[in-house]
Length: 250
Image (cartoon, rainbow, N blue to C red):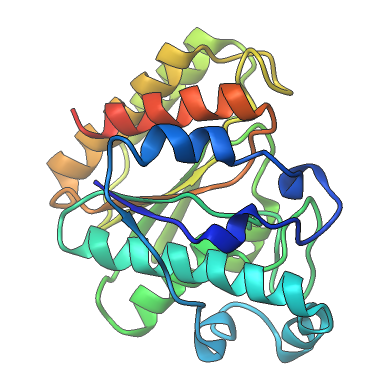
């Protein structure tokens, strides 16, 4: 397991819950004791433009710090995807999140769609011909769905189920119908019992990781990567990320 993290992710680049001071420090403290950390480079402009319009690029570039941090988040996710191609799971501990960013617009604390950029780059370079995106955030990844809505090479999963047992059952059952060469995970932890959703326990995130690892191992040679989306209680976020990653290692 490789973790992609840059210390610039700790800077407050905006005034929203995802950019709050102190949000990532507890998770970093937990993960750096267990996993190797790799510092990513910013994503290249041409990779961003695989997903976003030039107008959208220019609008984000108007804020230098925001633009820098958003490029680093996309870059961390791209590098995690490259590690996954080799059969080793990887996680981008990054911000800002990305799944509410569409081609020419964004909202919900998102600016560039990190997962979409990474998947589009792999497809464009013909390193894969299909991908499954799993978004277990509390909120629907409308940006990701919009970007890939006409792309038959990409399947997208999200559930609005509010019952924890049924949520996990739905994920397990739905995974049986998919086939893909890589799994890309929009890993949002705001469904947690101590977060906005008040729903999933720490052990549920471990179960999610285990289910996704099983799918990746059985159907796509272990190719799986994930990037942080939501999760706004710093202490709970740290525990839930750790449980998810431990599940991925099973």
